[in-house]
Image 1 (spheres, rainbow over the protein chains, first blue to last red):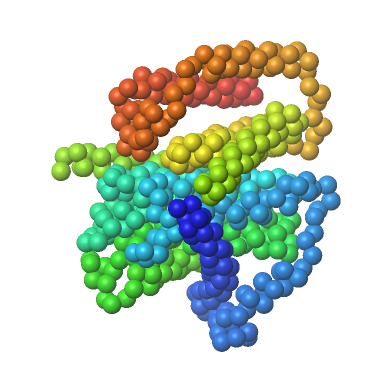
Image 2 (tube, one colour; image 1 turned 120 degrees about the vertical axis):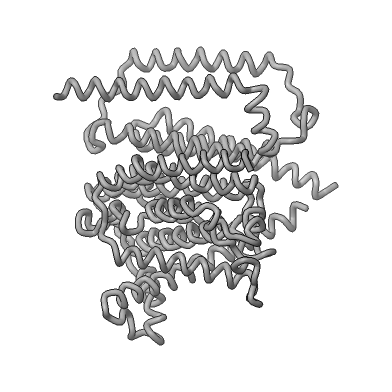
Length: 323
Length: 175
């Protein structure tokens, strides 16, 4: 009834909140390690074994710092933006299938829920960038909007072709349908488009023009200090986990082992292995490819990704009707 | 009995909070003099409407509302900000004729909507159908409401042509 269901949601969201912190701490460390080893240096080494506690120290330092509000900034929006960017990201955890029974709520519109709440991120970035009263922040925010509009279309179209195959928008059903063959083998093009568009949606290099360090200092969060900046960082890394977890559920069989072999590992272990592998791939890409130019970015989405994903969707529909 | 009455009270409270959010957002969208506040207010109002859909029991429609209206429409209006005047400049005072015309237009629309709402013989949703699944909505769209569905796409076509003409004219003027 109401009571147990509401408690399930609340406890689930609290767990997700805790997980998001630990995940961000781990991912920042991982990113610095990956960057270090790609550039032939060890990365953080001093605090804890192999620098594992480095980000914990950084986090404590961020909490202790003063939150500076720039002169003539719009105070209300400036303080609202970091909260608005982090809150909606947590909603995605409601429907992510971590294991056969480890899903807070398997809704029949789960896929929609993830993408519906991801739209708030753009508005929050825009509000933060504009409220900072700084031209670099505003430029970064505007670039972020243009980029998100362009890449959300191929992202949703590639997700739709998977939903067409399964005839369902529920993560539970989608993962169940992959018990024999993962969808990356049935929908390879959609998987590739999803990964590219998701990289762009999370503002990751080579699509990180909203915060391009060499042009815009730090883009939309230039003026943020202390935990305001920390929340933007937390949201970015949580977002990265969410898009990779969605990719795992849609294309890599979720909590299931390859081709029906579970190899004695519990579902959540498989899920985490695949998700963190995808996150590693995204980091690998960041430290391998240079940043694209703005016009290249737009052309790539509107002239390559969108036509390809539309064609893929139509082919999928025709194939489903014929066979 | 006790739990059910407190549940009803809770649901009522949630409903009025949602309505409050919607109205606040709508007021910000109309009365604020800063276009970014307008857009964020509109986003708040549309999120509130999504909350009303949720209250009515259709999670699917609520999520589509978020995806389309907050995700697409508000972001499209953000593009209009990029085309408008720099934000740090002084905003000019409201032009009286425009205000009068806007009030008149929305009054006509309000009277029309209120008339329809009052004239309609409302039947509770539970008595008409209990099936609000995605599949049913899809079937309805492609059978009974096909015409409405297509006419809406015509509106979008007009908007696209209008955008192209506007952009084309301004480009010709500037070159």
